[in-house]
Length: 480
Image 1 (tube, rainbow, N blue to C red):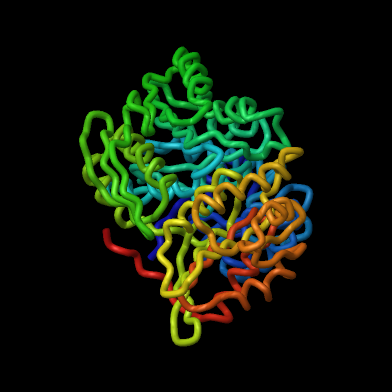
Image 2 (cartoon, rainbow, N blue to C red):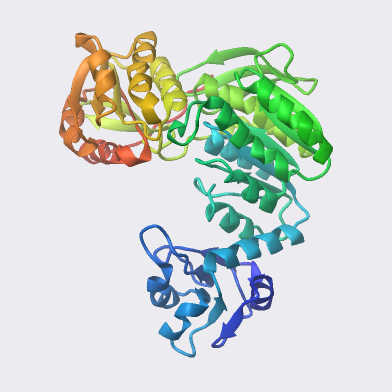
């Protein structure tokens, strides 16, 4: 039987909601999607960019929702006996419930932001902390103005550790979110040229990420990337924030001055072996995902977990169980004729730093006999006037990682296509849908195919087409 997350009375009090109909004693969860709502959950009728959730209240209740949260202006649309909590604004009500959730928590809380690696770092923290106590973490990439309050409001009162991902693409967006979460530890993975369309430069991005310092609990700690070019700027702002209660600034990286320091790294096709000094603990461990970027972020994960009071040796052991999520490096074996190929699904999102990291992973991948390393790449969005140059610049990583063939789609990727040597040109199209047939036709046994692009580039279409044409299975990890 599911545990009660909130009583109806506590929800109504937190959101200052009026009640309608016969309400249940409580709810087992919270949802903003009527299509996936589970029996006993509360449905929040949030207005999105495309849909107004009030249009799906009836469907949610029919699907087993225990109650729905609706706005006063639309309550007349629903039957008088419908179980409703009525508020002036549904999103604002969710935020108030999130604040009430934080107030009742006795958990150690860690927040993660950064230009790249937020979700994988959050998932690694979830993995290592859940082995040491009840742990709650944001699902998927719920890191924006509705994702953070939803994740916090979903946090059970009994949680020992909580992990939240906090994102932004404009200045000022992190401050209200981190003040809601009030973490004991904050990690900034790295600062890279991402969302440049909305910022004057990389320093402005660093300043926006530094907003995470504003919400730290008194006595809290921050974990910063010492290898990153913006470290000095972030460190200075963190020191200024010390007056607001930050008690410790920990750095991670290969830099000899880092408190969480990489000593040695052995990269393999599907995993990595790391030797590091983490806060004066000499430790060797394996990570179940490939790539130098994963290894570097694991230093921050172990430092962060230790600062929360977790056992560092047990945390390091848990990293061997890491698996890539869908769209973020998940591998599948494709049955191609009488042989196999490997698909690396990186279709969830892309920016110059993550694209470089993904090409590095492809470069490390082991091909079969006569196999090739094939990159299928879509546009990286929100880069502003620098977009064409940043796409063209990917040619360096293509060459350095011995990528055999590159398929490109989108107007920005045309810049990379034009820069490629003739022998590496697989195919070009204006969209992922137009490139799909070329990419699928190219695959043969022994190949490793990596598909990546920004979410708006719709590269998942090509991943789905490959999986449909060559049904296979999730690839097994390789032992170190």
